[in-house]
Length: 86
Image (cartoon, rainbow, N blue to C red):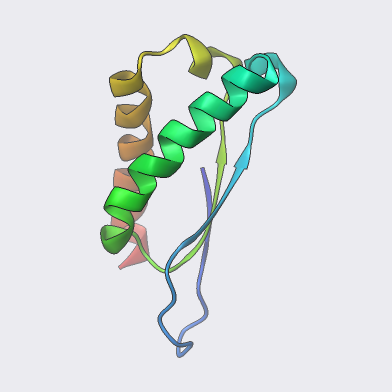
């Protein structure tokens, strides 16, 4: 995950999220399924995310993870960012 904080003094906006899923992750159907799962999870935790822009890059092994493991990995990335974003 790459994060770019919103400039200080800008009006509060919801976090902006983008995804980078290379073809090695799987077919378009697989990539879209993984992306939709992560998007839905991020919507549920958006209120606790720091304002700014997020780029989630998923590696080829992401498609083999079950949903819980995938979302746990996303939460781990967000937790690592939390101390720096405050």
